[in-house]
Length: 201
Image 1 (tube, one colour):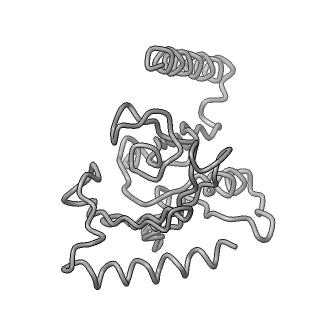
Image 2: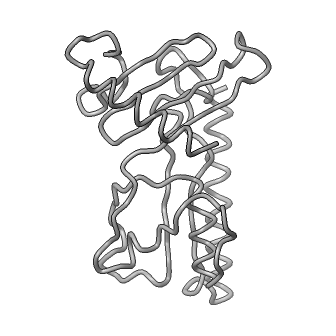
């Protein structure tokens, strides 16, 4: 499985190179917004898991590389830690095409994060959810509140919660949901989780 995964990644990488070379050849590279990303991360045995589906960092963190011809040289090659989501891609592409997104479209244009002299205030957390696939014994549903430093996970089919300190435990190996010292944080995370889940419906 892993061999096939890496073969696929290598082929995607090579194909992207072909596309960029063609843009250069057609003299379109300097006026083309290029976004490299993917739909999900992939477990390589972390947490005893393979594939994707679950709200741990290995599965929900994805690459995002933007090459925007409007970007100044000082912004190129920089890493921005702002919390972007896949729902931001459509508004970003539409804005680059000088087109307004339809009302009700989720997400935000991310280009001000790298084009503006003073980047705007940005999201500090988000609601995550994944539905049950086939049945709960195959892929159970999961929901989460993801912040920069903390994560709250709910497994609705089982009524099970988890709480992780992403700063001190980035690999999510120490569940703090039953730690009495974290009770105030857990209550805060639960409340914010319910607020964002309600907004998502």
